Amino acid sequence: MPSLNIFNLYPNHLNLYGDRGNVIAVKQRAQWQGIDIIVTNIEPGEHWSLDSCDLLLMGGGEDSSQLFLAADLQKRKSDLQRLIEKGMPLLAICGSYQLLGHYYTAINNENIPGLGIIDLHTLAKPGRLIGNISISCPLWLPERMLVGFENHAGRTYLGPALKPLGKVIKGHGNNGSDSTEGVIYHNLIGSYMHGPLLPKNPWLTDYLLEKALAYRKISYNLPVLDDTLETAAHKFALRL
Image (tube, rainbow, N blue to C red; front, top):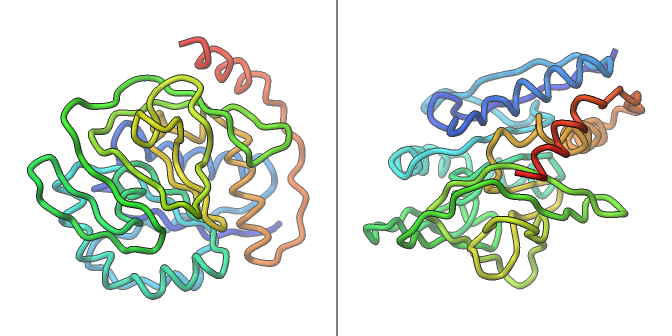
């Protein structure tokens, strides 16, 4: 049985709108597919090394949490950047997605420095972007739909060389103006989609598991699961 190490970063601070469900979805789906999953929760101030991590999960947090966590993350920047460039899979939702960019300017004009690992920046503006969201995602051919829920004041703008996670079909996405949502950089995925994201989109969960296996150089074909219920739930979410 193959085994993967999943690191869940700052779970007591980054868990808006059920983002902890992404960890549960990865663990359960992997077990159904015959993969042993070891989940390690990492809190601020704890000593940790990402060298044994096969998939890093980060949820969303409020502005106050981002300011608090930014300093701790800065201490880990070099390792995080090195492993992202090496191909470590990472799913970052909302606030943690913002922190991977150059900076986040809060609604009070307070500037929160990001890690600068990916070429994006975020500006908070009046009026929150809230509601169900669906996007067309190019991670598969033909493209597949992803669904979720967004609630953010930040408007994120990608650098010209970055690819978005998808094109907004319904909702707001990165900034409500350019029809982009999220980002893809190597095996890093950033997104504003809560809900949580992975239980609503099992094919994205499988995608991350496949990338984690490949990153660890484990040869293993994921067995096909009966996704009748998951597909029905996904189709229902598309109608919301």
